Image 1 (cartoon, rainbow, N blue to C red):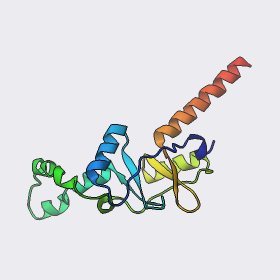
Image 2: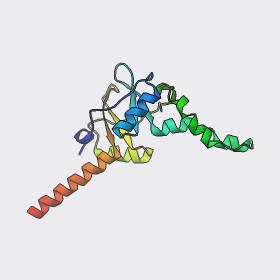
Image 3: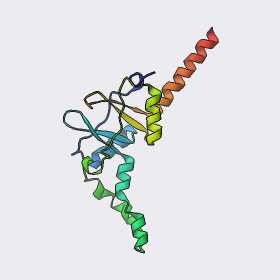
Image 4: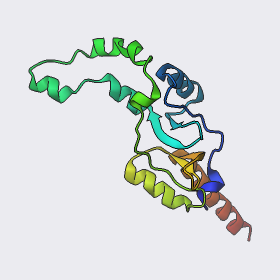
Length: 156
């Protein structure tokens, strides 16, 4: 099985100027935890995840502790509104792993496990976004293939 067999080609994306508010809405309404960020030529330039957004909310707790302060998490949470007016380019992860459509599926899954990511963009040779796969997609595909093999063995 290869990445192309399971990749989702209907990918929700953002560009560097997309507001975090709009991206958060996309993530919530579509039940996804991140979006690839592309340029005007559909080239992958970053990824924005829930983790990136939440990380931007929190102060450097270590530095606050060293200075003898105590973080006020309630006021940090209240400041979330200010974060919503930032743009994807300000918070996105710029160093992005991606896979190719012809890559073996388990190799792509192993990359996700090693990098501790739940989704990975699929790009062509020009780094244009052509799809995405999630760890859940991989698990579902392997499980279904296993069930089909078991059923055909029992039928024989």
